[in-house]
Image 1 (cartoon, helix red, strand yellow):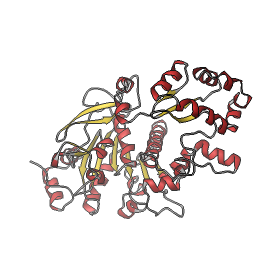
Image 2 (cartoon, rainbow, N blue to C red; image 1 turned 120 degrees about the horizontal axis):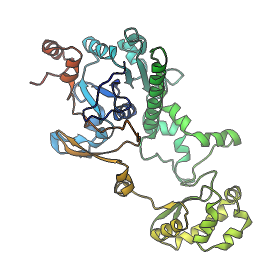
Image 3 (cartoon, helix red, strand yellow; image 1 turned 180 degrees about the vertical axis):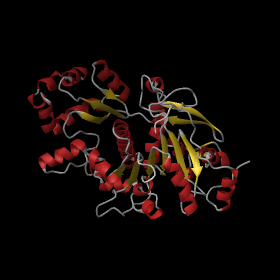
Image 4 (spheres, rainbow, N blue to C red; image 1 turned 30 degrees about the horizontal axis):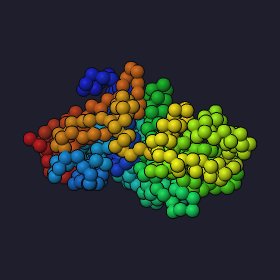
Length: 415
């Protein structure tokens, strides 16, 4: 199935020639398929008639103005895709989907559990005519278990998945992480699983398989050392602000004008921190000589360090610490992050031309390859932009397109 097609600009991504049929929407699925698109796959985004992906309407903010505007949220996870409007609520629309899936390498969907089976578009249905198909179903709780039919939203998943129990200050209210990590985390696991299945297919006998990824499973896995701390101690960890349960000092300290973040992740940093603060007495204090003791005597340690940093500006603290090779930073906002020369050098702020919204900007890809680079070759598609183009590639002629449009399966083809 993996062909020899080339990307429009001549670069060849590692997934060049792979076709992804993306029947997902909002975040978890689109984030997954965007990564596959960045890696060179041809991603065909299936959108429902009318409004398409819900995030198209999640404004403000938006790039452009009026009817030509494009949702910033939508734009953030839908580059490198082609948009096809297709009514899957109709049998004729489902037949078109089956035609596309027959030649696809990968299908990704995040409908409620059981919906694709109801439509005859589940893995057992599609694999009959495409044994090499890799089918990834994304859901809140997975395809089995007592909660399989429950709805899932990121803030609820962060609460149910344990993340909010360890996020925020001690004795304060629970706090949601500022981006939808439940969705993004599951999207990353889905991409990882798809790539593994694709490799296994190519190294094996060419047979694909079904992948089931859930937001709750992803959150449970992301608990990592916090979960292990609980398993080892029997005590569920709680909220500690920016502090670390196993390392000290490793947190934000208030300064005269803001905060400084300090990360002494190894004992070798402790003498440097004491020298930076001109506190040889702290270095000589047996309570703080190794990390285990600093963790056990955290209250006394924090009291001493808080007093030191409270008498310094953030700039002074950062400069003093970094000059002594102690990991430190102020807390940067989005403007500072994306104006960073390091971010620029790594191509993590990407400008793209858009046919209606003008110029848009999106975060770049963190995946850097020496020989098969990722590419930002397609703008986030306008609604249904590629319907005629894609269906034409799959053998639908003008008469077929008119027939589908008359049946409200696709929009009326543009002249």
